Length: 217
Ligand SMILES: C[S@@+](CC[C@H](N)C(=O)[O-])C[C@H]1O[C@@H](n2cnc3c(N)ncnc32)[C@H](O)[C@@H]1O
Image 1 (cartoon, rainbow, N blue to C red):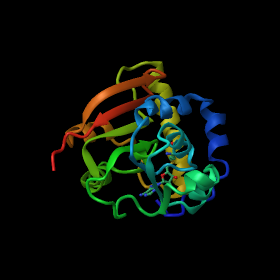
Image 2: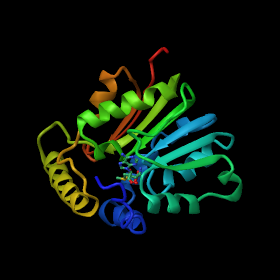
Image 3: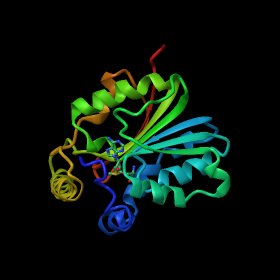
């Protein structure tokens, strides 16, 4: 993907989402966000236009929050959502998540919302290995993304059609390199993250989950 791939989309991203899916992605995105309540250090990866950031600020009013995205356009929109007070405790970092430097043993929560589907399986492994040392041993990983329903039928066919359309669109607009959904949750589990809670919508096309770090440093 081009590093500025999402810049031209930043202004329309939310409207496009609502046109295509109504409020369904918003519900999936924030299904388990209550888990951020009371957290002290939060890392948002590829948060895009900052809707996740705005809600995280609300739920964790004392947290220091770092949000990393490589689209300057998206980060500008995220910044616009912040109150002057919240700007003091939020760091917006324009960087590639796969290579950005994160402080060790620091965050008690990390979020990837419709983000890991930008990566190949190998890149997700790299992402997990790269981010993990910055997590506290009992940190949570909030996850939301598309999934291909396992059971054959209309939900799976519909999902296939949507995924084909979306991958074509994002390849055209952002230079997205991958052509199919990576098995992100399986990779989190293989890496030792433990599933705490999960919600599926639209016949398992939309997944929201909470994973817990079980890695002892
Ligand atoms: C599909 S959008 C999802 C945005 C948001 N999380 C949401 O729920 O709608 C993916 C976001 O990840 C960012 N992104 C993609 N690959 C990235 C990378 N390697 N490092 C940092 N940001 C990345 C893009 O710029 C974009 O803002």
